[in-house]
Length: 327
Image 1 (spheres, helix red, strand yellow):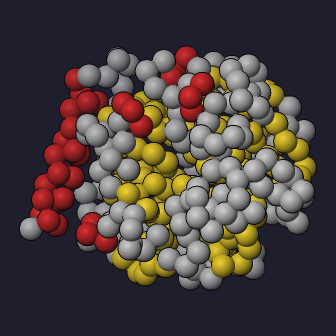
Image 2: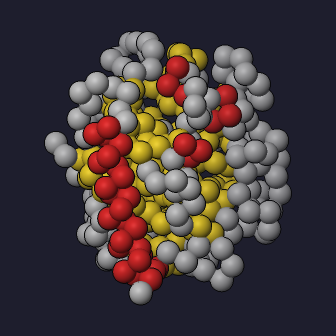
C-alpha cells in the first residue's frame, strides 16, 4: 500500500513539474530540460530516515544515499536502475554531505559527519562496502584548528582525482570557511570568515570544482554563489541575482559543464544556471527550473556525469528522486 501511495505521489509530482514548465515559467518559451523518473528507486521503502545527501559513482553505476534517524542504516547503495543493493552504518553518525572519488586504481566514498557524538565533526573516507579508511578532523570535538585538523559541522566535500580535497566548514557551527587540503591532508590554503563581505560566508553549504580551475561554493545564508581560484584561493566573483527568493543549497555541474544545478530548499526548486566561459564569472543566468512539490525540501544533489541524470536528496519528502535529461 505504501509503495503504491509513493508511486502515485511521484506521478502527481511529475505532473506538477510539467505544469510548472507549461504555465508558470517566467522565461518565455522555456523548454523542459528534465523529466522525473518515477520508477527510481524500484522500492522507495528502503528510505527509512531523512535523506540528506546523494552521490553518484558513474563509473560503476552506483548511487549512494546518506540518511539520518534512529536505528536506520546511514548509507544506502542503489544501482543507477534503482535496485537496492546494500547498506552500511559503521562510524557514521549524522551524514550531511557525500562524495564518490574514482581513481585509476580504486574508488572511495567521502562523508561529512555533523553529529555531536564520538564520530561527529569529521570528514571520513570509506571503501564502497563501508570500511572506514581515513578520518579527517578530531572525532567528537568541534574546533577551528589546522594542527591538529578540526571541523565544526563540515557541510560538504569535493575530492579531485589528484587527491586534493575541498571542504566547506560548516553547517551552522563556529566556522565559515573553505579549506583546500593536499592528498596527505595538509592545508594548501584557507579562505573565509563569518560575514557578508567578499570571500566571507554565512553557512558555506556545498562545493564543486570545474575543469577550468575554479571552485564554486554555495554561500547559503548570504544567498549567493562565490567562486575562487583553485590554485591560489583568490576570490574570482559571485552570483546573487538568481537567489533573491532563496539561497543556494547545492552546486553541481552537468556532465558537459554547460550548466550548474542548484537546489533551493525553501522554495522546493531546482535551478539550472548557465556556466560562464573560461576567464569570466559574469552575472548569474537562470535558464531553467524544476518546480518540486510543496514540502519536498531538496537539500543536496549530484549528477551522473555519464548519463546526465540528476539525483535530488529531499529531507522533506524523505526520499531521493532521479531526474533524467530530455536532450
